[in-house]
Amino acid sequence: MLLDIDADRVHQLNPTASLIWRELEAARGAEDIARRVAETFDVEWEHALDDVRGILDRFAALSLIVPQEP
Image 1 (tube, rainbow, N blue to C red):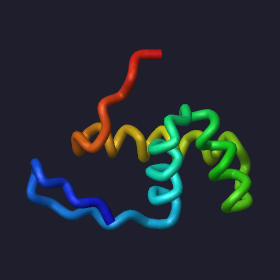
Image 2: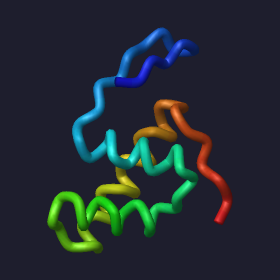
Image 3: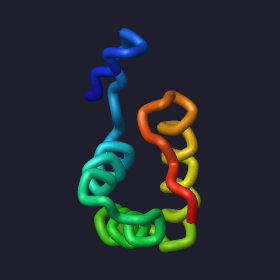
């Protein structure tokens, strides 16, 4: 769970989003995170990358992260 003090909200993360959040704390990029998701959940890397990008977009839309320029 994430506590967003600025928005006065609590976000409950599913296992995939939780893994992505933990990997972000280690300052990993989307491709590296997708590899970890693919290994952990036994899915194709391309599918994992789509999921990672979607979740990162959602985190950004909720102002939980600030995307960095490539």
